[in-house]
Amino acid sequence: MSRSIVSTPDAPSSPLFSQGVRVGDTLHVSGMVGVDTATGQLAGPTIQDQTRQAIANCEAVVRAAGGSLADVAQVTVLLAHPEDFAGMNDAYAAAFPVDPPARAVGRLGPELPGVLVSVLMTAHLGG
Image (cartoon, rainbow, N blue to C red):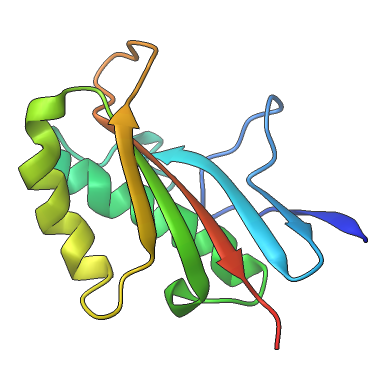
């Protein structure tokens, strides 16, 4: 099965990871934090701000592969602070208001200055 790298200028990037890796009809999107690529800064100080931006960053990678959030089958959310769970859910529900994908929520391991959340996705892009 073929493996291809998916990248876009509309999501954070690093030489240490691929934004997305497509294997067949499955797209794996790396964990994205709430950095706004237009400014290079975190989208805001709240969990809602950063969750919205992290999801938008993942969505940009899914779009670059030819998909949309409707193609997302699974999402993993990593929180720096478990007490942000309710606020994250508020922003998350706006992105997936109907028939949301499967989801897991865990604790973000490394302490990254100002980073409250990381979101990764798996999407199915086939027939």
